[in-house]
Length: 353
Image 1 (spheres, rainbow, N blue to C red):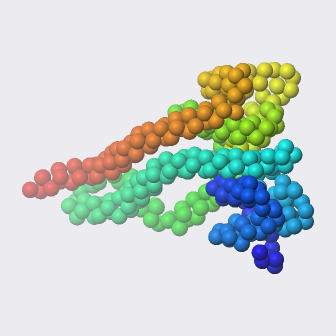
Image 2: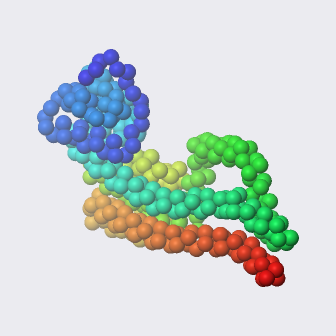
């Protein structure tokens, strides 16, 4: 390993975390000393960012720090990963914990990829629709305006209004682009603030038609995380505390924290979770049944896989509805604009004939 390199605090995505945890688990199961194993992983990593992160870990391990301490001081790892590694060290099953973490991050990455894939195509269609309409307004309508003028007629009021809008866009294109860029930058900055994050997360949970989908997504992430943590020997309260940082929604995390507070006052765990109003009622009942049977971690794993499948199916159905709907809207808008121009033009041509 290159000793002259500066340790990195770059954050890794879920697939990179999955690879890293899986490789560390393999090193531990192979009986290779952790310091030597991290050095080998850093030298063999093709991704420069991964190699740099592993170099930072290696520096900590060389100083006889436990792996969890090295992960924490590196600064680029999620707090729940550090916490689970520490619990794995104390319980003596760090290799199992790292294997579970690898599986968790891989499944989380697959779920996130499916969500992105379902949203990408409709977004591309929206951008194309906007581009076609702008092209129509800015380039095509002025041609029709010249034809009307040469024939001594006037464009319909609607088409004339659309044309004036196009002329305004042409004349002030630079200013409009600057304003749009500023607004987008301001929105991005705002949604990275705590207040913006809370607003975005509340919007997701209250969005008509998508509330059920997001509830299943958060239920899947929650049960997936709880399954791996409970199977690693972590107690219920600690598992819930770590799950708060995994669900990727500040509102859901706050509700889980509220349920933990209720449990601390003596309320039954799943009744407290049910009072959050976030998770489906069937989800809570299944967890309660699994707890009574002494197989809560197994039931949570099965529930997570079930919800993953439901989310995938619902995303496919949603995409199947949105795509033709956008095509219909685009056709209606373009056709409406052209018809308001073509019909009067046909009348003028007929009168001349």
